[in-house]
Length: 207
Image 1 (cartoon, rainbow, N blue to C red):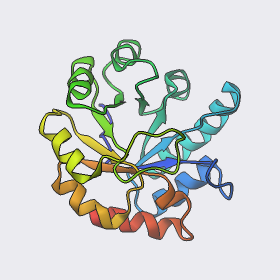
Image 2 (image 1 turned 30 degrees about the vertical axis):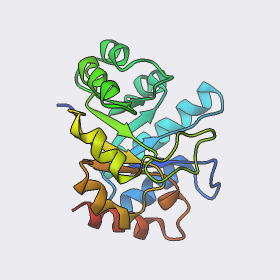
Image 3 (image 1 turned 30 degrees about the horizontal axis):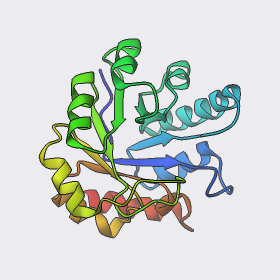
Image 4 (image 1 turned 45 degrees about the vertical axis):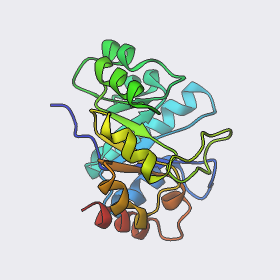
């Protein structure tokens, strides 16, 4: 049976912070009630990514959280992740679906309703949309869309939308009202002094 698409995607990061490994971040997030962990590592050797992804997957398996790998389908397949998320510069969603079959989650980044409809046609299970309020995690990021940008996008999307981009727990109600299915967070969790508490605030807001 295909895993469920999480409402809260905690994206693990070891660039903005170095206190915790990906696996440690995953454990802290799960302690706070996160239902999804997305492993994102932009640099390092493939062997190192495999090692870290496997450790993070094991934490998620024990904690009952959906484990998604960002960008790297090869890593996701090698560690038997629950899913993969592909951006506009990564392997197309249709190819990820063709190579991996239908029992895994495939998410895709989309900036316009046309991109979202293409993702739907390609077999994606959800789309990531943003940045809503800007971002600290990407250089040369796209301009912030704002809530109204999300509302316009949702009107022509056709897939569950995961909103991303400097999202805080206090923002969640307005994002859900604008059409988001859930949210993805990096700095609001990974940089928090008390990670489980920060996650618990998002979980409560998503209810």
